Image (cartoon, rainbow, N blue to C red; front, side, top):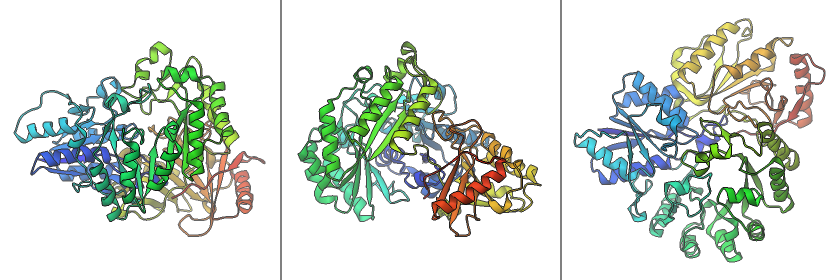
Amino acid sequence: MKVLLVQLPVLSADLAYPAEHVPLGAASVGAYAFLHLPGLDLKLLPRDLCTWGGDEAIVNEILLEDPGVVAFSCYLWNVERSCYIAEQLRSRGCRALTVAGGPEVCPDNTWLLNKNIFDHLFIGEGEKAFAEFLSCLARGMRVADRVLASEPLRPEELVSPYLTGLLQPAPSGSILMESLRGCSYRCAYCFYHKSSGLTRALPIERVVSEILWARDRGVREVLFTDPSFLARPDASGFLDTITPYTGGLDLYVELNAEHCSGEIVKKLKDCGVVQVEVGLQTVNSKALKSVGRKWSRKNFVEGVKRLRDAGIVVTLDIIVGLPHDTLDDVIRSIDFAIEKELYDELNIYPLSLLPGTELRKKAAELGIRFMIEPPYYVLKTPWLDYDEIYQAFSYAEEVTGFDFFPVEVPYLGSLPGNFLSVIELEGDVTPATFHSCSCSLSIIIKNPGWWERIESVKSFATSLINKNPYILLNWIIPSKLVPEGPAMLPFLRKLYLWRQHPLDREFFSTRSSVNSCQVFITRHDPLSGDSNVWIWIPPEDTGDGEFRIIPENTDENVAEDWARSLLRKITGEDNPGYRIGEVMYA
């Protein structure tokens, strides 16, 4: 029996997120089964395919593998795509059992459970239950229960997917690592403590062995997945133990700033920690209490100051939409972070009511409306309405100068596995091309007569989307192929509306709620190597509605003059609204 593990990446147009993809969850479950079931034919979906492949490429490869079991690790960023692939396997005659686990599989996630796509579902930490399931199948036994679960394993029972040879570093050269599981905090919006309420520290020997494994393979960055890096009872001693082995590695961790004494900060620095993420969330004490959090304002500020004084980059998190938080409260939190200089980087998130969390259970009681589909964003609370959530992000951009919704200039280079990041649309495109698309595909218009053949372009796009509904699309039109007059602009804006996609739900975005598609006009052919200027075309009636001018290795004033002239040409307006965007490209 062949077992195939699938954990799909976060998607981004510049392919930066896929490049950092490490399927740690799937690999951890697989490593335990691999160790306890000798002779088991088990593997991860090939790294290049999982990282870069489009939907059709992944479906075709799984069909070729002809596995007995396909196991999906489902997170809010990949669960809908995973469901689609599982449905395609079934509709194309795949005989494999399809199963799913991960944070998305919870008893209260009726959106997923009611789909009836997967043959079996695993709730909670899945190592033991999955291994027992495979053991039954190997002995020819039928597993009657659709929903399966088991108690979490003891730390010493967990198996390293790196040391067993199942998992390799991300294409970017980074790895994810865990030093503990579970969480002693009880934040009502978080799932960590629901999956395991006790903090279970992994043996230090395993952590050291994985660090040495990483160094031997040229890894430069280690991102710890621990919900709170200093939550181990022996945190100080733990840092002392691993420090001799972390030379040459940059460590990234999440922690509670209130635990950062001068001694601990020095040890973090000596250990190689270069960046930490800390959660302020809000300064409203009533809101914090309502979600099971408490804080010492003084200790928090002092902890962050120590971290920053030591040269450790601090990323600060603020949540918009917590119970009892008004727009004024969110503004106070942002102003507090600025006044006290609490960050190098600032993350502002809308509240998500994740499956399995206390806050999701209490949503109706609290009068909170939220999306039933991922990413489960809060839409309205008794204290904050739909428009005010948008206003909170707009205010944050205004006072910080950050662009929280930057345009991603797409990656246009070659990819491992011969996956296509670019299709040059000169004539007809054969259907075979759709099987080699990457998860972010740029379509560069090359045919001077494309506008006269617009129906052919539409047909091509429809076929492409039907085969690859979850890939990201980037339409690129060199300026020399832009027709005279404003007739083209409505068509370009409609390109955003040709499908529904999970990444198109950011209603609070100051740029656009649509992230699955981007439309650009460029000064030069983007493959020519010339210094370029990108004009991002906004959909209608979304965000601020402004065009974005993105200079790429180009003088900003030259870029702006050229872009302003072109925008007058395509809009018919003397002063079309635009802003200079940040250069975001891999």
